[in-house]
Image: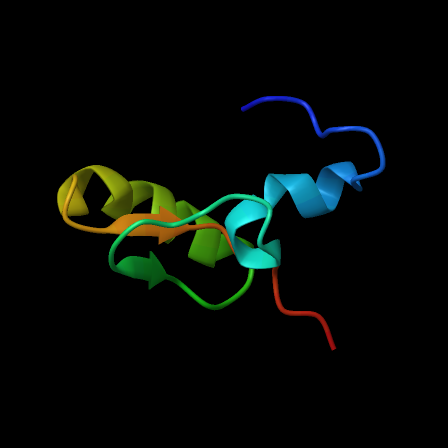
Length: 62
């Protein structure tokens, strides 16, 4: 992953597709939840291959 451009919060850049910093072409897959959700997204990524794009989303906080 590249570094965040000047003026962009690095945490926001990490979740770039979610915040609109990077485009997603075609269908996307998001796993909603806490830190375990990201681990599940990483496991699903190679399974969905080129058909879907897995997208990082910030963890739930409340």
